[in-house]
Length: 107
Image (tube, rainbow, N blue to C red; front, side, top):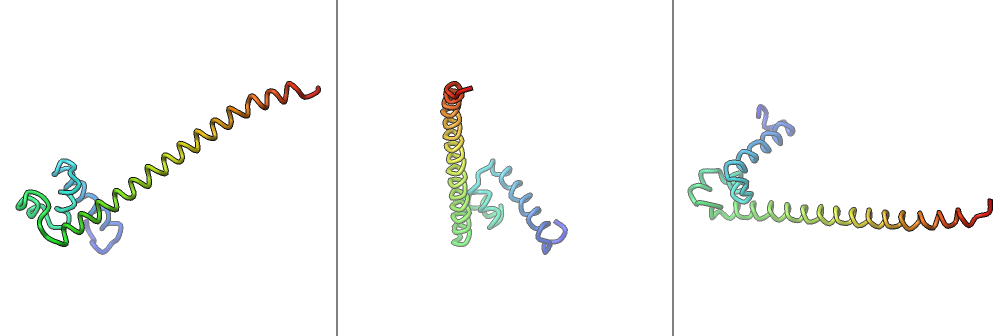
């Protein structure tokens, strides 16, 4: 990251660093977030999330927000799927009715 005050560069650098931490901790999100906040040396020292109030609150907040958004996305996907099935069933029901109407209409 060249300029920490450039928002785009800052987000890109932070994202790269988090990805490196995730890989280092075998995609253990809790350890990666703790290392992102307190530093990898502290996670190694305490063999997990260090006993710092700020780090524990940070990890809990991020995990909670992630889970909340994930649940909302899953609900939205399920709603779309149900809506799509309902539309599909309605179209199937309309086809026979349209065919019956066409057959019954005078020519």
